[in-house]
Length: 126
Image 1 (cartoon, helix red, strand yellow):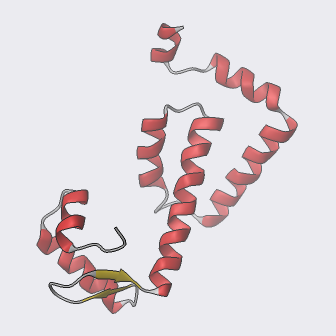
Image 2 (cartoon, one colour):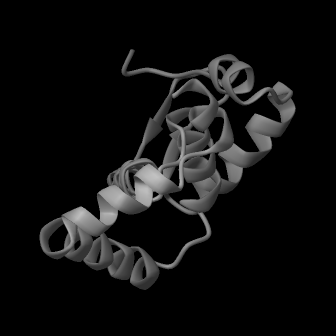
Image 3 (cartoon, helix red, strand yellow):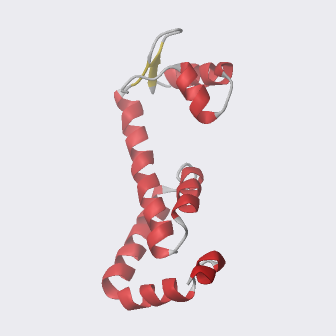
């Protein structure tokens, strides 16, 4: 929507509104959001840069888990949500380089790995 309110965040995260307000106050103090009680919440330029970086990391991790490791998309999405906040940028960069190497230099090996290492539920379907 371009605009978000405390109740929207509370509902999306499954937490109580006072918890959201406490977090927003801390983010406001760090200059990452503009927050006024009973008003809309906006990311600052700095907050937006951080959010974009985390989202880019999330997208990459999800694709890596699905395309390289063969993780089912719904699990990959969930794991990326957790992993993106804790993994160092250097680690993500090396994962990118590894994925690129596999896809460019060893596509056959990658296909064989994925074919022979399907999750048990997928093996049953085939």
